[in-house]
Length: 278
Image (cartoon, rainbow, N blue to C red; front, side):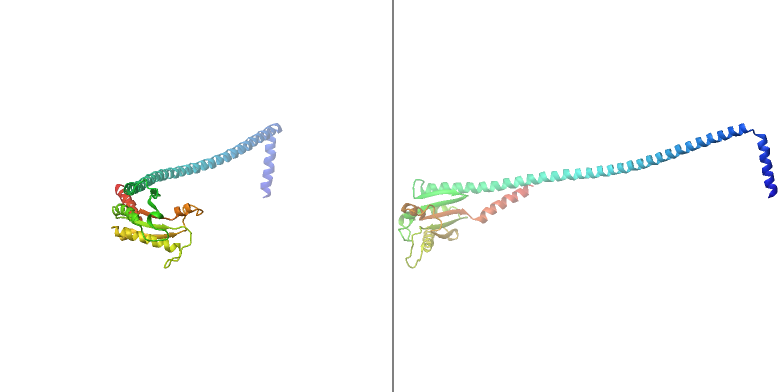
């Protein structure tokens, strides 16, 4: 070991004697410059590596964004396709609804045409110029309003001979519409009434309605078409403050109307035609 140390010291002396101080300083300077260049290169390399990593991360993010855009575009395409399909279905539904509405309107128009023809027939039979008899249509229903004095004597429910003549004309029209119903609706004024066996105006109105129904039945109208209704004094046309007004409120209405079932059958038939057409 001592020999090795002695050899190293000897070598240093030999080298020291071989290289001048000036050359040694130049070599040290060159070494320092090389080290500085190496350090600078290392810093730049690390910077480049860092930027490269950043670029890789950016590229990865862009790839993810691109994949997301592709997925979104596919989803949007699917949504657009579904939207177009929904719009088409909506349009078809609207067209079908329009057709249904049109069919319903046709059914209502047919009913209104029948009612108009019925009114024309009644006015022709009964007469249009009699102030005590009025024929009109309200909400698709035919009303024949006959003044009380034409049908009954005061306080009575026996039908007069003139009334039977008028009811005969009504019966002629009603019999021509066997699928229609005929409701007789009697009204009174509020003046108290009590003639046994009747006890009040309600009793009187019901009895008058049934009396007219019986006359129509005798004239050939089918009983299944007839309805008797008494309204008493509870649906006045005008205030009962004068004798003339009370006379207006004493009246009998004959209401001719299609059976509800018949009307709905008409609508149902139109709907079936629509479905068959589709």
